[in-house]
Amino acid sequence: MKKLFILLMVFYLISSPTSNVIARIEDRDVACNVSTANNQQPITEVTYWQYWTGFEGKAIEKLVNKFNKTHKNIKVKMLTISEPRKKTLLSIIGGTPPDVVSLIAAWVPELSSREAILPLDTYCKENMISQNLFMPAFWKMLTNHGHTWALPTTPTATALYWNKDLFKEAGLNPERPPKTLEELRDFSRKLTKKNKDGKITQIGFLPSWPMWAFGFYGALFGGNWGDTENGTVTAANKNNIEAWEWAQSYVKELGGENVQTFQEEFGNYQGPNNPFYTGKIAFEVNGVWEGNFIPRFAPKMKWGAAPAPTKNGKLITLVDCDCILIPKGSKHPKEAFEFIQWLMKPENLEELCFLQGKFSPLAYSDRKDFINKHPHPYIKVFIDLAKSKDATFFPQSAFYQLYARELRRAFEGVMRLQRTPELALNEVQIKMEKEFLRQEKYEKLRLTIDNSHD
Image 1 (cartoon, one colour):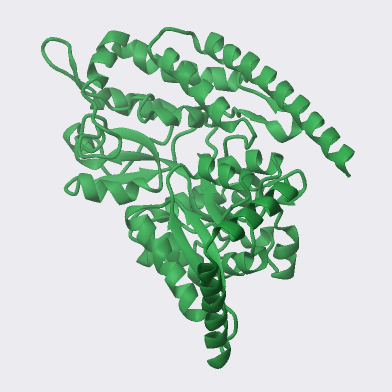
Image 2 (cartoon, rainbow, N blue to C red):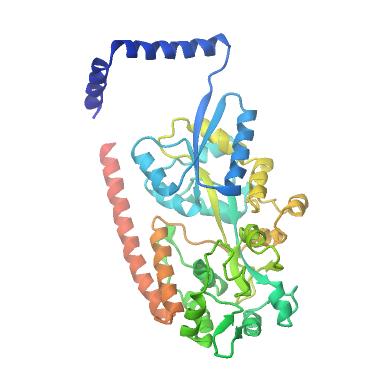
């Protein structure tokens, strides 16, 4: 490969006009002379890929500009990309990765298992960044196999949102959300309406909205989806089955066909026709980001957010986060981490989270001054949930996307009354156990090949 590269370069030089080659050399020398003449220190350009757009994109752009203004020897060049997971992997394989990347935490295990990203342990130690700086759940989800692979930037947690206007219409106290699962059921019945033909026009709580909430219900009943680092997949956990039976019971009570007809009128998740925004649904399980979209799409609606009721009364939430990491092949890893380290400073990280309408992953982000100025009126609810010892997250694994996709497909079948929760989850369990064994074989083969090259 090296010989081929040299031959191609020779051919290029021979086939190029001599004047063009000389011009390029002269241009380079002029550039170098200008830098030296002005006594400027060399500037290292750090390429940064991120995927936020809209107000979230403007928030990170503001932080990047702030960094560039305060650092003379490093310039961060930010590029907004779509399909970040795919493009990051392709760039690493092709040997042309960016220096630093923002991704979601769920992709970290896959990238680390492929040795596509650099462990940050040494950099963190040198810069006194440790787990004590962050809420435990966010540090844990970015650490596996004894290494820290990324650091959290903007997090989320899951809570129960409710429409206070609909509460008032139903004769319920708009300032008091349900405290138990039994109250949630009772409130939902009072908030459900049908016309004279028996067609549903309003539902209190519909577990299939939004559809991604399927992963949260197991936690409400004390279940979990596995610990893939230690070799376990627990889709068919009895508590998960009980949780999905509870979710399915809402559909059974209202009638499967009736619910399907009702759902056909739903609009897009992020848009003015979202059923929660239009008052067709009184409750929804959602993340902290919803506080950004309700004022935009339903500005007149009065709403609240509180911890979701659980079977055992614990303060439970499902957390996730965006994160920042260094891909393998980064040309400037030291300078890339200098940007990361700067972003982790409380004043910078909190500014980013504030501008994106999220809470901070820092352990002490529940300070009054941060909470009081925050645009989300219920931000403390999400901070308390994320700091809870029972905060949980979907298992971080190399086959995360496959697992989540299979669970979603299974939940859709359960909500359509096509499968019992037990049958659906056992099917997922069998598929994921096979996938886990396949991943183990791949990892052993990869290690064998790597060792043979040493």
